Length: 505
Image (cartoon, rainbow, N blue to C red; front, side, top):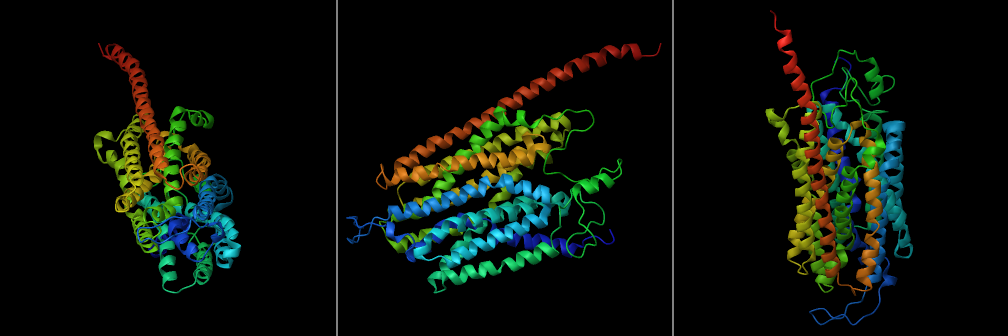
């Protein structure tokens, strides 16, 4: 491997990527902490109205449901862009490579942080494009980091899962901003610092990332970054150069192996129109909607339950943000559930039998993810502040299982040739469903008069729809098992019939 990237360089790429995902990529999901700061700075204050609301201390506090609605709209648009833009951003990454994708991500991220830095209560409208740019820039950064797992062979799946967990944990960055703001540091200064960090992203792009893509399996003496002479190798280039008899290193791939020989591959549109995919999109969409509504309305929910007590709201906001840090620890659990059958020699089947075993293993994961979300939704519907500590824990576990399970299921259930397109399409369709969070918030403000209890109860019923997906998967497993049994029976019969004829006289 002379001339290839050394262990130190690979480790530097891994750790710097983990820092990048954990500090920058998913910060919008710490929105509740930033809203607390923005409210103290009187953003959208003109939407508050005087009211006769009285807290337990006997003091009046204003009706700021209009202000909460504006903040929720900012998060709705930002979270929508985070998912919907996965499809076009994935195409840019596939078509133009890592360097171009990261330059676009850095530009969007820098622009978003500068817009927040230059925003004021009079220019609060800048938050709308700012959060959208931070979302799209962050999702594109983590997209380019997923390939880092290819540098580490059999640890590939663990690293990819770890990066997704770091993405979840990055929401705690807004907690740090909240704490620093309470200690006197201005919002503008902190976002100027975040904008300056783009120089670090740029240096990492030049020295620790390939120009195109990191291949898998990794070719001998593979190098990348500025020190690599000429162009970085792409997967296609390596596959063309690799000898036909060389199967590459013996590693466990994240996705199912592509069919070999004359095996037929199901085309894209039959996959999209299958019940398996459509109910999986429902599974993803309803639970993601529940999470987005919770995150987008957490601050007004706490304000409602605490009767306007800012100290209590601050304590619970900090508790929520701290639990988000555990996302990096929760993310690998679902992967272990999905992969545990691979450790059993009895399940090390190949071909159709192996694919069926993988699909069967996904059923417990799907059921467990829905159950976690139902429990989280029940706790969120209880109008008692202490119960929300349990809600926070269940929310971060459920969210970690949701996104890791989504990617893993699509990789298991469908041909790997369509994984990128199906993943992008599922995220885009779920983003459209996520837009329902804004009318839900408007419903609470209007008809429900600021009390989210009945909306939360309704969301429990909506989440229960997700149980249909594992039922559909289980039925599909039974159908495939019957087909395999029917296909193997004639073969066994013909083999037994030919055996006497082959016996020498």
